[in-house]
Image 1: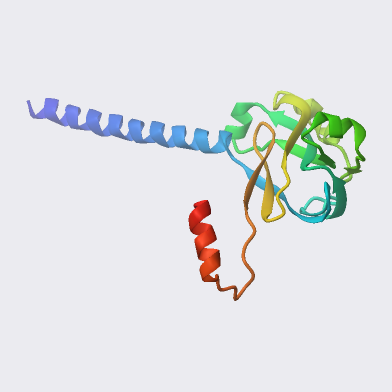
Image 2: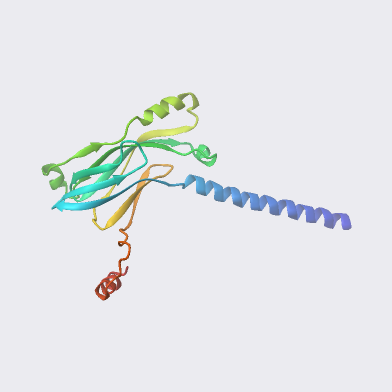
Length: 195
């Protein structure tokens, strides 16, 4: 009888450890497959109607700077090298290269008739990475272009992220200057807008 209790206790401990390990692996898998890294930040200063000065900051060579863009939206493009999910789980991340930045119009009529500027970003090519990995192509899932765009708001900071399957953008209100004290009117505006 004592031996049966001893074996049962060992079995419960082994199964508990296996359950905890399985849950840990599940969390690790989720974290690795949904990993995002900020790759650029930008904000806009209005110049005139549908003309903005964009201030773009990035650690990537040749990407950061000030750009004049036309339109009521902005877009950034990247060449993207997606790795297989098991490679992500093992700690490898997708590769990207920011290649183009431009303004755009939400209205297709304006897009086809108004001025337009696009800027080439960065140096190099993701295909260089693909060629480097050609001997290791069992890591590579796909090579493609990834793009994100959104409306321009002058009081917002946009952050571009690299996910494991492409780029995406998130925004947050521009911070108030250091030492800024909101007035009663500012408090009422914030309350009315729900901020």
